[in-house]
Amino acid sequence: MCCWLTTFPAWSQQAADQNFDAHVSHPAFAERAGPTLYLDHGHHNFHRLDGRYEPFAALALNDGFRVAAFEGTFSKDTLRPVAILVIANALHVSNVDKWELPTPSAFTSEEIKAVKRWVKNGGRLLLIADHMPFAGAAADLVAQFGFRIANGFAITHDRARTVTMLAPDIFEGESLPPHPILSGRHEAERISRLATFIGSAFQSPPRAAPLIMLDDRFFSLEPSVAWQFDSQTLRRPLAGWQQAATLIYGKGRIAVYGEAAMMSAQISSDGHKMGFNSPQASENKQFVLNTLHWLAGLLPPK
Image: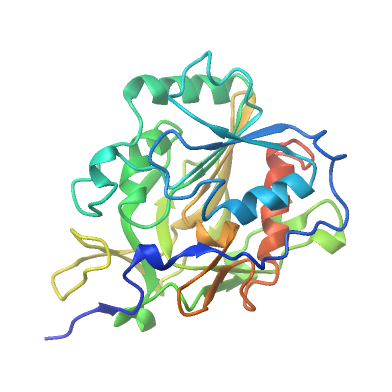
């Protein structure tokens, strides 16, 4: 009987790379003159400004964005000062120390309604929901915008026996369809190659614009406990699904990404790099900036 084993099961091994390069050669805005970007800290988030998303925050700051932590719950009043909201790997309290089923929503129904209304009225949302249990925790929120997310691990068939975040999936060519985020503002910002480090996958509503397309090499492993796979683990084909997409919703914009490490710079306890610090992810740093520029309205909607 075959089985699947992971060489990287311990999420505690991930930390921000303190030697990351967050320099921005040509900032989009003058220092702290750009839109206010809030990173969610109010929903047991695995990625925070003072932790694994410190490199993401530093990059945004160096591009001129005003960056702050969002504490508490989402409501009409608390979202009022927010120009761009980034939610990275939120969790329900029951899953903070137990990455296993069930994976309830990280957000109450009232919060989901508030976020939906805020985006419709012009808010800009970057929602990052990684592999299980993070995908499950975000499922109710993304469903309000028409996205259907698989609560699993999106991997290729040739990596099924050793599921590890240390070896990235590389996307180029047809897997990166035309999109303003991939084109950037000029040729120097054009993206032709991206690396992701195992995340989730989703199906987008018809009006969404795909950024990262999955083909028939990919399937979703959906265990009852994160990083524990065997021959009985549910497998879902992912051909035609996405790992990144955007949507214009009312007056607002939303980007849904199914992988979190690609947007930061992390390092494992044995020194492996994951994110825009990885030698195989040379264009990911610009991808982060292009994403923020699209949300800020510096790039066309599609």
